[in-house]
Image (cartoon, rainbow, N blue to C red; front, side):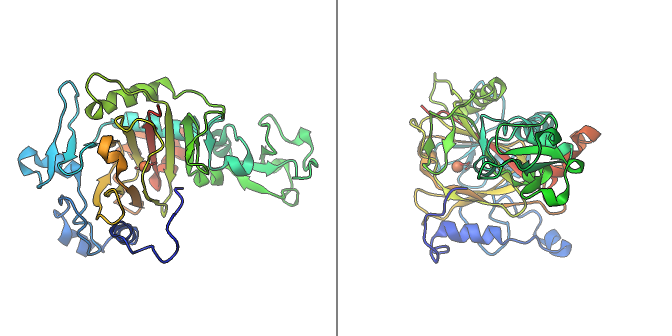
Length: 367
Ligand SMILES: O=C(O)CCC(=O)C(=O)O
Ligand SMILES: [Fe+2]
């Protein structure tokens, strides 16, 4: 999603790139090997290397261990009046980690919203450039619809309108039932379920323009949903300048499949860096790298799990960060709470999706 700016060949020249590569290529050890390394996971800062996860900071383990057991460089920075435990790094001011900030029920709610509501026009997604605005993608996927091109680029109708049913939308593509058209009549067609899998991002509120790497205020947009804005305001408190309140104006929702990663980048398109980015993790566990102001500085790796919230404000806004690895295999996802909460038949599609996916909602005050 974030363009790789370094030319080919530069991939491993920096400490950040090396860490990215090492974690991206990490393979879980065999069961025997895994039991040997158990208990080594709550390491301190810095990238230990060696192809294992022993250097990855595990804030859930630190929370369980209690305050006396914190590794050097990590401390609690709970805020009076803020009801959740907060961790931070002594040498990374402006970065805050709130483990387990959301209940399982809240996580399920935001996963549903991320799949059903957030990709709805006028919000744009990575699919918009190819297919135009797509309405009700999630419902279409549940109903096994197919998206077909109904008008070729030269303007000719490909399919008679009366075949299309009620799901027509204004672009050149429409959802149809598989039974409604012959295979040979589908010059360009994709299962709606496959398109849900191809979702990589959606943008809420002020629309971010990835090609210009800036907000395009001329694009039509809805304001951030009230409940998301309220959540962000509440969770931003530990990182806010005292006496000020966070106003959610834009959000990027990232959807990660099994081998997806987010390359190291800095989010610098918002005017006031004293306000945090409020970043919510949902679904499969991942490794998050928090680096320095250049890629030469070795990043600190940490696990992000479903329900964790990270805040990046002030100096932390200038730090490279990224997600080199999500854990979709076997027992590594840490989504057992979600699995039991999503046991209704109605949630089957969501459960199938989240079994090997991660969603991140990061909310920003732009001005
Ligand atoms: O997925 C994440 O946790 C980080 C996302 C991020 O850094 C971004 O969208 O700018
Ligand atoms: Fe970011």
